[in-house]
Amino acid sequence: MTDADDETPLPAPAVSVSCTAQRGGVSFPTTRMVPDEQAIAFTYNGSTHAVMMATPADLEDFSIGFALTEGLIEDRSEIENLEIMSTPLGIEARVWLKGDRAEAYAKRRRSMAGPTGCGLCGIESLEAAMRPLPRVTAEAKVSSQAIVAAMASLDPAQALNHETHAVHGAAFWTEGEGLVALREDVGRHNALDKLVGALVRDGRTAADGMILMTSRVSIELIQKAARINAPVLVAVSAPTAAAIKLADEAGMTLVAVARRQDFEVFTHPERLSETSRHVA
Image 1 (spheres, helix red, strand yellow):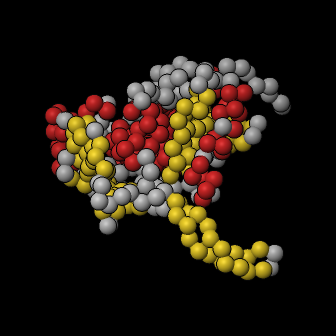
Image 2: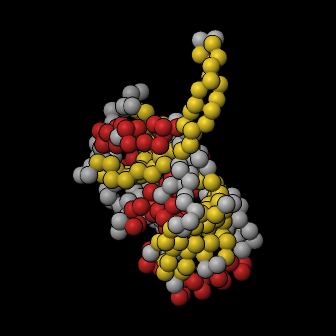
Image 3: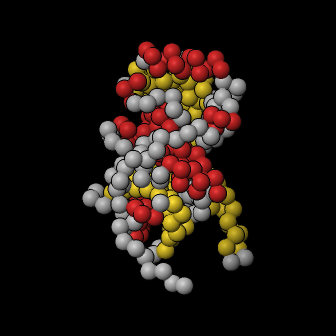
């Protein structure tokens, strides 16, 4: 399904750079690993849809996840071909859609006012930016112990972040399997798109577990998670008011400020399998 450009290899996701460190009042030359950031152009049937700045890793997952969470496809089978091509200016993810989906995209393309930036790319209007979400139908329940265990599994699995200390992670965790998949990127929404792509390529949704994020929760993360029927999203940092409202409307349990043994539940607490003790 995917062809790589043999002549121009993809850049590494992290590179070593020189710097001068200041430690205890003493300056000295050293090196540091930092994440790379490349322009990724998503093209559909020959037309550029959006250009994202992202970490050049897991780009097949990114391409599929982005197409699904942005509503360009409903299923992976609607993609006829996918090529990841490295060029001197950046990277192109060339996606070819099948039949009816290609026609629907061409019609959407003709009506587009233009892309708006990270997380809400190629939308036609304010109404499209706030498009209704599919309601989460998954009925999975989680325990507070599972939330704590799931978040504790993130740090050991973040290889790129250990190397650079500068990337976000998005992961999927179930009580039966533990950490199923994790993807990293300089952009939190990119990391989630990559995770969605990884799950879709594995033939699964998020209905039986939790989406985990190492970032704050903004509205586009709720939009993307709802597209794969995620019943629970758990994040390290706080959510925005818009994200809380949207998660509530979508029927998603939003857990945030999840650090060590503590967390806060903002929407649909009925999915927690036990009632926490309330202190007046």
